[in-house]
Amino acid sequence: MSSRGNINGGEHGNPVHRAEIWINMHAHIICTSIQSVNLYHHDMVRKATRPDLAAMLVQLTRQAVAAEQPMLAAHGLSMWGYIVLCALDRSPIRTQAALAESIGADKTRIIPTLDELQERRYIERIPDPADRRARLLAITESGRSIKNAAQVDIQRGEERWLGQLSANDRSVFLRVLHQFSFG
Image (cartoon, rainbow, N blue to C red; front, side, top):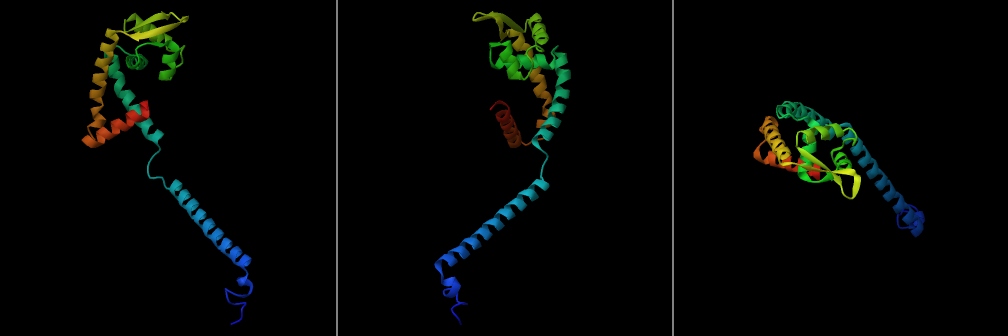
């Protein structure tokens, strides 16, 4: 056998040439691996195993809101009124701007809701001593009472969905949903 055909001799015996062959072989292996990962990734994207989170949550949210509205109406509350009372119950005093930001509402659009809640004595709005233009908000005892009564009825109605889950699944679902919603 000539030294040319021997991997340890001839052209291949040159250490620089052997290094080039080694680098080319490994580059080919790496490129093939990357292509496999990309094909796997594209295959996974094309074959989603579940609906997107937003798609699932929108369906659940629509059903939950539709189920809650009659219960809120029975307590004389609008959805926004209930949301405001829940937010104020979590954090007793806020400015109107901070409240609007925390509930995802335009601060000018919640003013009629705040007016109604104040008229019904569910909240108090007092001038901020540090800034006379701002109003500090607080839920009153009657506001907390009506919010709690509505919340009990709402959660009783949620059994429509939660009752379908095992005790463990229910606990995990509520814990994860709370974590996603409130951090």
